Structure formats: C-alpha cells, structure tokens
Image 1 (tube, rainbow, N blue to C red):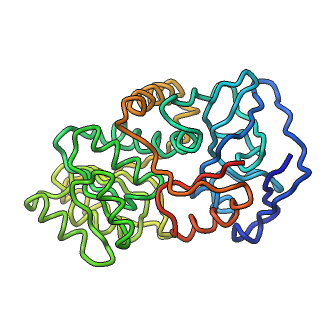
Image 2 (image 1 turned 90 degrees about the vertical axis):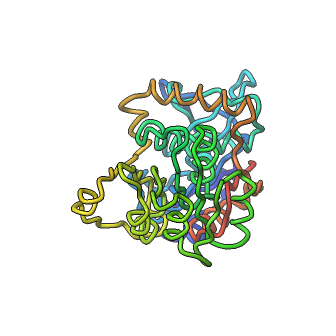
Length: 318
C-alpha cells in the first residue's frame, strides 16, 4: 500500500517519507482493518515526529492519529489507529472496542475531524468544567482544531463565547463560527476585552490549548469561582503557575488528558460520541475543515500545523 512512514526524530518534512511499497497491516486479535477514507491532521502528529509526545511508537511507524475508515461491509467508522499503524496510509488498524460509527450527517473529511477534537472539547467543558448556560466561556486558539470545537460546543451549551485568535483572517472565521466576541490578540489585549465584555466579572470557564502567555493572561480575567481547563501547550511554553494566586482569587485549575478516558472510563467516551452524533445530525456542530489534501500533502500539512499556519482542520484524503 501507499503510506507515510516516520523514520527518525525531527521536523515533519524531514523525517516523514511517502512510500509506495508498505506492507498492508495485519490485524491482531481484537483489531480490524479499515480502508482509510480520510485522515485529520493533529498537533500530536507533529509532536510524535519530534519525539516529544507522551506516546512514542517504535521507529519506523506510520503517522496519523485520527481517521474515518471503511469496514469490509462498507460501513464508515471513526477512531484512532492502533500504533504502529497510522492514518496517513491507504489502510490502517483500529481496536474493535475503540471504533465508533461515523455520523451520517458528516462527510468523510468532517467525520475524520470529529473524534479527537470534539471529544476533547466536550470533556473539557462538560466533564471537567461543568459549563452552564449563561456563563462566559473564553476559548484560546479559537479557530484551531480543538478550539473551533470548543466554540461550537460552548454555543450549544448556551454559553457566551469569547474567541481569541491571532490575525484578521482567523478573526473572520471565528465571527462566522458564531462567537459572541472575537479578540485578535495581535491587535488588542484579550484580558481587557474579557473584562469589558463581562462588566468586570471575568470568564467563568477558560479553554486553554495554548499555555504560555494565554494561560497567564487568563488568570488575570478569570471570574470568582471560575475554572481554567488546561488542554495543551501549543505555544511550546508550559506555565509554572503560582498556586497562591488560585487561592487568593478563588478559581480552579483543571487538567484534561482526554486519552486517559479510553482506558479509565471507556463508557464515558461512548456516551460522548452519542451526544456528538446527535448534535451533528441536528446541525448544531460541524467540524471546520479548511483544507482537503491528497496523500502527498501530509508531511507539509503536519509541518504547517506545528507552525500554527492552519485554521480549523486539515484533512488528508488517501
């Protein structure tokens, strides 16, 4: 089969190789072989190339952590491939207990982009932060993969959504996504904007996949009894927060490692998928797919996601 292979640790465009003669993966007990119909590009794909992700499959491996695939009976499923199999190839393996029906309302590319981003956002907002209708939700990187999901799910929950983005093009997309307030951090201070928008109260919930200055600024505009959910560190800077500040301002700092739920509480993941499917079928949520590329474009796409030069989800169509 045709597929990409990571042969070492380094920049994606330097260590990813497109090969035409890769062996088709053989399913072990409890696994199924799927034909890859679409594969969404994720930030962890870049971190795995760099050797900086918490999961390190042995080299060489096929990259790609999220797909929409076709079973032998023709039905569509979504999920995370079983390493060292990956999504950036014509075929991949899925664990039979960790695949989910693709929502009928979504095409292949949209379905491929649903699983990780929307599950992450749903668990962050509902399981961890207990977001309530009428609350103010501050979303960083609001037109990125998980950020755009958080904006849509926040709106679906009845929250007032403040979307923080970097640049005029991303600001326009955030406005189109339905955010109540869009802040271009390259032109204005999001801390001051949140304070003004909330009449000085601050954000009740912060969704932070960025870290660095995004996290630091969030602690300056968090509401009384607010909740900051740490989702990732796309900025490359992991904050070292003074816990005394959380005590004095009476806010809660929450971490989210969504992947743990598959091992610790798989039933919750399935319940979440049913909820997301219902929202997709009713037209409330729809993944923001900005690019649909052939298999040849995977390495460049991963590199651009690493550099923050994409919006929404970039999807590979093998």
